[in-house]
Length: 134
Image (cartoon, rainbow, N blue to C red):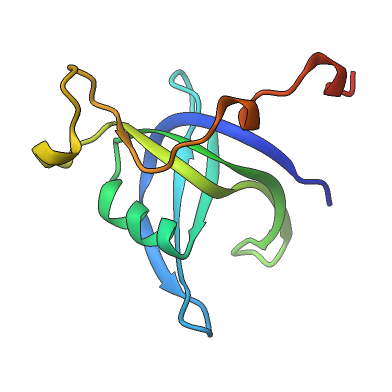
């Protein structure tokens, strides 16, 4: 299994669903549509504090940007066959356009709809040309 860092933007296709692990750790997942012209779905999974934030801040139809580790998971379909699906193990996210209201204390003075839930240095996101494997 190979893991790659990814930053994806798209529209929340299904509302987040929150569950708990056996150790009572919150896990929230939702489906993200990354293509406006056709349906291209990626499952996004958040754990811990990100799971709580995601559940309260995001709903179906919102435009979001998510960052995390892109991975392939095996799931069993209804007919019993095993399928491979792409999923993002989320480390941070931003809501670009939300159907939920944002309190005035958390909004900035500009006219942007962006609500930031995690800040990252651009050096963490960008890689140099010498690191590209092709």
